Amino acid sequence: MTRILFLGDIFGKTGRQVVRDFMPKLVGEEAIDLAIANGENASGGLGLNPGEAQELFGLGLAVLTGGNHTFRYKDTEKMLDKDARLVRPANYPEPCPGRGWTMAETAGGVRVGIGNLMGRVFINASLDCPFQAADRIIEEMKTAGAQITLIDFHAETTSEKRAMSWYVDGRLGALLGTHTHVQTADADLMPGGLAYMTDVGMCGPHNSVIGMSRDTVLPGFLSGRPKRFEAASKGARLNGVIIDFDDSGRATSIKALNLKGVK
Ligand SMILES: [Fe+2]
Ligand SMILES: [Fe+2]
Image 1 (cartoon, rainbow, N blue to C red):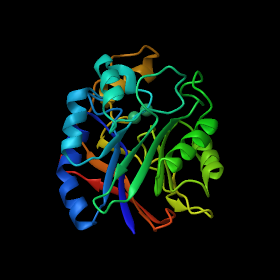
Image 2: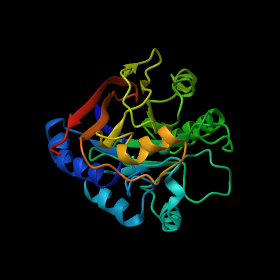
Image 3: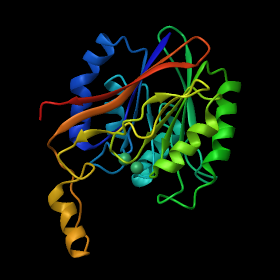
Image 4: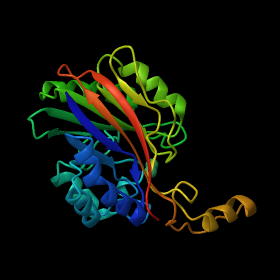
């Protein structure tokens, strides 16, 4: 049995802090074999800079996945090329810096393929087809020797994520949705052995509008004129999932986490 912790979008300083507060306890008490997180909002709420990526690796996260904010910092492109612990959605049109999947190994020597895809509905219509990219990366991860496979599907709509779950069930170990920053209540095992959740949520300030300060988001809705968003800092929560896999790479359980931080 292999147990993997996957955390939803880490948002700004509050997100990094709540991960720092919970990680040692979670990894110890839950006997986590490998910890992964989506890091696309870890720096100030938008993007991930190389320094803060290193900070998160230092907290015990083996791999950081990305999304629509991954390319905010120019420096991150160089890191995406060099550091195999960082992945970005596989369906960005080529050429594109970085990689769409990577391989990590647990302390027990189990090889885990970790992929990243992005949706096209209401998020970025210019991307390549995520379904065709799923076919490609699942095959590539297995050919490279992955015993367990997992994909972070960074997408806006529940329908695109749900459709993808049926498309990959039977070929993939876990499909975990990110991007909306709101945890859904549908963590489940599918008939073909896929652990699925439409959105695992956000590690960050939940006293906010999906991470940003209410005072900077609400005026835009009320007046129709946008205001510069600022990251919120209160209502820290850690959102994610713990998934168990058997030796064949099939998921045997998925449990959602929604833990209240101190702030
Ligand atoms: Fe996000
Ligand atoms: Fe996103």
